[in-house]
Image (tube, rainbow, N blue to C red; front, top):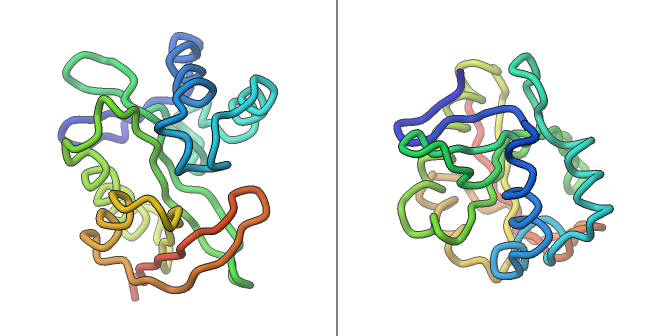
Length: 169
């Protein structure tokens, strides 16, 4: 089972659907600086669930439901995905946390976990992360995790992004 000191990564289960839908489709504060830069439509949310979420513990790449060990509540989503940015194939880690959990060090905890997991378990040569230029909190997390700024670019479905990278070699 994938876990940190305070969090567990669980495959998507129907019991998380309502909390995920509220996070992705209704929480403008959270969603304005992630993925599409806005809340998802119901159809986009359905596609996200079907195509991007981990549904079995045997899967490696995709979004996991991030759950608090203390009370089993959904904290957000996080995972590693194959990606292609600025003419380069790589793997991206990311996290979307409900704003009730901001400022508690959970983003740094998640980032540390994914960096270690990518290096030691998945044996990836590097890991990248992207962030909205206006998301100062996430930029600080990536810098705290020792990722290097690479470039600013525009992603087709996500708008302007800053690309960060950590090489493991």
